[in-house]
Length: 258
Ligand code: NDP
Ligand code: 8X3
Image 1 (cartoon, rainbow, N blue to C red):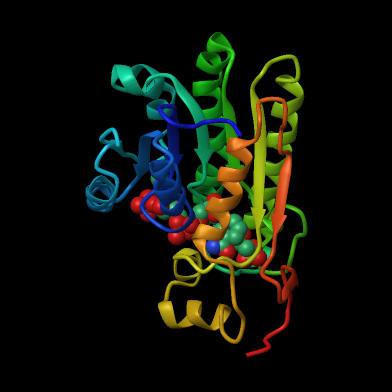
Image 2 (image 1 turned 90 degrees about the vertical axis):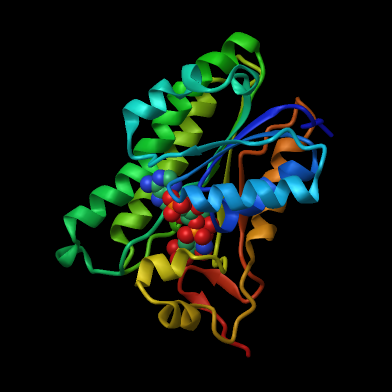
């Protein structure tokens, strides 16, 4: 497998869920971490915990940032401290769904936030870091898509559109990069028990109902997939991993078996 020790890994949305789980796994493997999220205190806590758990870890570079700010994303490659500049693995994970409105009731501010976070930021960060990867002839872009990017469902018109966009952007980027050593992957999870549903539905009790009587995926299951993709030998390019809980077979085909 490819060694990630000492390589720079940038993870967006590292303050919770899948991104945080990825930070743990890459820290365990000795990567140098650049961690992004809006909640600065959570980044501080995570870095302190990782440092305690892995004393030889290079202190992570913490960037409290709203990824909707495209100008800041563009400036990031120059703004990073010198030893974090050669970003080898870009994990575009920050993302969200807001609400379950039907198409005729979509809240346009929420729609814009989903498009900006889930799509424009992925395009912006990829644009920002690919030139460096191309110059160094190494690198891997790993996007967190969704089963919602493979199968659309009622109540998810905007969210599904954003994840189909992530899927298309991933594929097209892979075509663009075919003559280079740079790899592009998307990981497409089904139900993962993170803060995702609390954010989407606005209340923890509503979120708990989503995962009731089902053993959902957990964030570390998806981090496993990310690490798998990142550590394949250089000639192996994971295109997409679609991963469901055992009792889910489609966005709305869920067996509540207790
Ligand atoms: P969480 O809500 O637990 O985590 C989302 C992360 O994204 C947080 O760290 C949050 O940090 C960050 N984030 C959101 N908006 C912004 C922003 N504007 N700027 C910077 N960071 C932001 O959910 P998950 O871990 O589940 O979600 C991670 C990814 O996985 C998303 O792309 C999601 O669409 C995808 N996914 C999730 C599934 C699930 O069932 N949970 C299934 C399939 C895909 P902060 O609030 O601090 O900014
Ligand atoms: C999140 C999974 O099925 O709620 O991407 O869209 S789903």
